[in-house]
Image 1 (tube, rainbow, N blue to C red):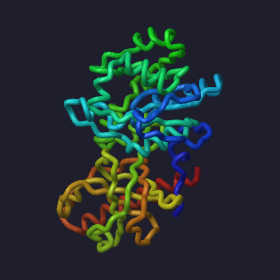
Image 2: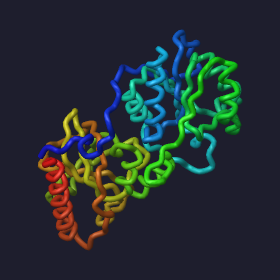
Image 3: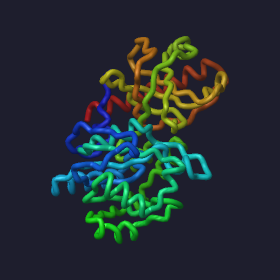
Image 4: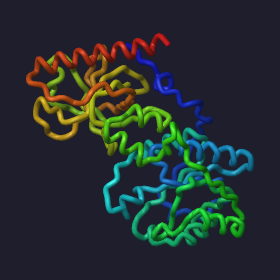
Length: 329
């Protein structure tokens, strides 16, 4: 059964033209860029609708002024180095860069955020990194952007130095949907609670994880519902049972995905198991992308295998009906 494309299910508007994006993974090794840049700065975890607003303005300004469109982002997230509480990322760094490249960005600089970088003063950051090393003539940031040692840098400092250093500053206001300010922290919370449809609404596209198919217990195959067991580097694995699409080698398949502890059996940690509809090929070792479209239920502990099989049959009926409806549109 072929499945509807992600764009058909979660329209996000047209991307700008994709270009080949250069990635520099060590800010410390860069000599001052010869071409002046239009530069967006931020963590950009999730590339949600607020981030998209920034990136679209960046591309517009770079085209208008003939500047190199560039993004400066950070890895690991500053909160992982400085924060008092753990933070889970919406995307892997590779996924973040993949999304950034879809907005016509030609250069991405990934600054390693460590304790030495954190000690850089806000003024040094603007003078040495933004103006000198990255040759910024236009800078685009979100209204909540803070930077420098002890987060001392704010919009007013950026504004005061912009005229002296000859760059134009654009401060992009936060995006609201249904009265809610969109933020990465909000989306993280929704995903951790399994609320993928709400998260997708604020992301402007469907959440996805990437991984590799590994050998599991083969329990699904033994009860008539073979699954691909997925090992993923994504830090957020939404709990529950979801209607999904599975992307393998450029092809897309309708699927049903369970994320959880498999409580009916051994409860040996969080697993991601995907059943591809009308598909029975061994996938061990294959790279796979799972796109989360809709949650249909929480994970349940069943009294026996027969009860589990009956529920999976119902889940598959719902999945077929869902994908059939969208194919007719």
